[in-house]
Image (tube, rainbow, N blue to C red):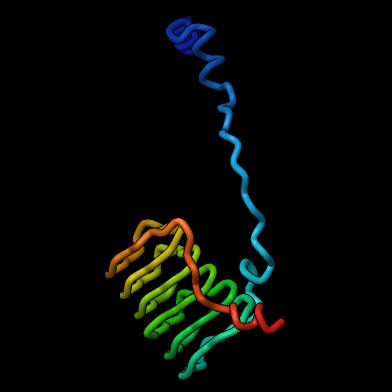
Length: 156
């Protein structure tokens, strides 16, 4: 008898069908994020040091030293070479692969394996990769008001 025959005989035909049957995933409604919150439109590249505040809408990627507060209606990516020092960082989505020293308020925060955060985080969705570092507290909220862009919406 071949080893495969022993395996089939031990599990039986029903067991094999169940083992390879596709699992049904629960139906989940996912809202599509707007283009401004999920796409990088501006880059602060390496070799640039920025001191001052950043505010506006759209997607921003930081790959250098940034010292100042950030209020962004959109996506903020702190790349592996990015270093942000701030009192407070507010954005819809924050993805950190570099370093952030300061408090973060965002609808969604991701800390990648190379990411380092020293500060408190307020968010509705939080994910980390193995190796990520956070020294601070996380406060999970059902809904997060980032307080950015309301003046623009009311004026327009």
